[in-house]
Image (cartoon, rainbow, N blue to C red; front, side, top):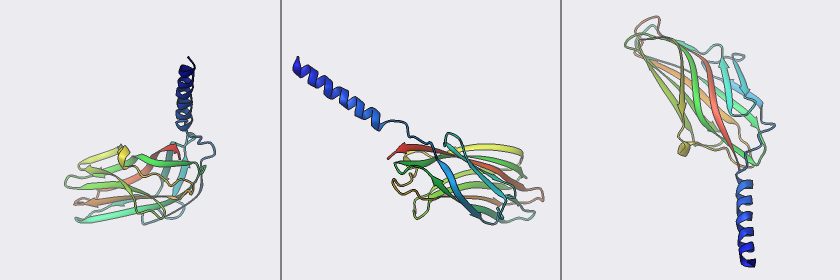
Length: 195
């Protein structure tokens, strides 16, 4: 009987430890402390950044991210964003997906590739989220692309580093003056875990 009680206590302790370790991360106080941006697609003052109340998504809105070409060939623009995200040192986060909100007018024989590259300052590891538009297309389009769980890059524990987001649009085989892409918004999904 005494042995059973000891075993029961050990099992109970194991469950308690598992519960503590698996507790949901406390994301209170998570915020964007500072930001900077630059590139051919985002002159100063043309972007706006925000993080959701539940800290599960980062929204970047663009007011000048436009790419158009009337000639055959290749054209590209990009916007590099650096976000200093403040959060407790016992947490880490990873980018899980990107949702693109674009206005697209692409003629037959043309295509455009919208991509977002994510990495932490000082790290060579990157995640690249890509969507390709193939003409003819005309209208507002929303696409969500996910990063496989096994490929997601986590921020380091104990020493938060800025998150870099390099968004670009490349267009090729443009054959008409109405070939055009306007990047309106990119919403980046993130997830958190305890270190």
